[in-house]
Amino acid sequence: MSVVPLGGPPAIANKFFIKTAHGKYLSGGPQGALACSPNTQDWEKWTIAPVAGKNNVFSLRSHHGLLVCAEGETQVVANRKDVGDWEQFELVLSPDTNPFDGEFSGALRSLHTKKFLSAQPDGHIHANREKADAWERFSFVSERPVSKYFIRTAHGKYLSAGPQGAFACSPNTQDWEKFQITMTKPGHIALRSHHNLHVAVDNETGVVANRKDVGDWEQFELVLAPDATPFDNEIKGGLKSCHTKKFLSAQPDGHIHANRTEVQAWESFVFVRA
Image 1 (cartoon, rainbow, N blue to C red):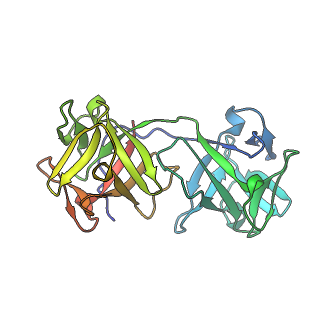
Image 2 (cartoon, rainbow, N blue to C red):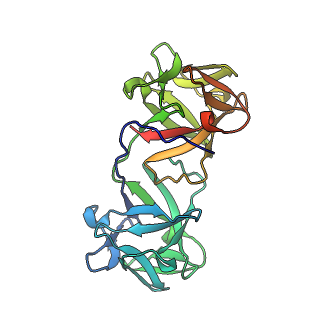
């Protein structure tokens, strides 16, 4: 999948709070201590970045610029400057994860110990669990949750829905270009416009935004780009109509079709936090 990098509203840096099963938050101190805290202040904010060349592997950097490190099964700290195996964690997302939600859950497996991080009731963090049960599950909560997105095409314009249901592309990033994205079932979404109407595929060349209710015609399978993650400010992917079984395609003249069998440039969209 290829997406042409184009301009638009600037991506705002997004950080996450990491909530444990005990209702507290991972907290990184300035000297590298890692524990749990009831607070949601700066020490509890984390920058979660993908590791280049590895799928679903991330590093966690604290407010102080230091990385979480699993030194051993009961020794997890946040005091490293560089990313090695000890500072890398595989993310195992819950099956119902919606990448557009401001909060989602998952587990973190250390690439060093090969075991899951586990939040203990006393506030300590271990990396010694073979499987992910309740204590090994974390909620990743965006510090800047959003409910709407701009959807940018390969031609540098944005999907836009008019009050009467017209659906086309626009150079603007105003209210008509904002969409609320809801998960209808795992891996499938619906797009609701500023006018509270859903995008629907009537046929391969008839895509509108005039429906009040969600059926197959108003649902899309979300096919994420290989490097897309729910931590991204801009999420790349394609949209396959549940009605035509084909991908939405943004035409250079501004029309939207649903008649492509695979994702190429024109079928790639970038979902940008509004």
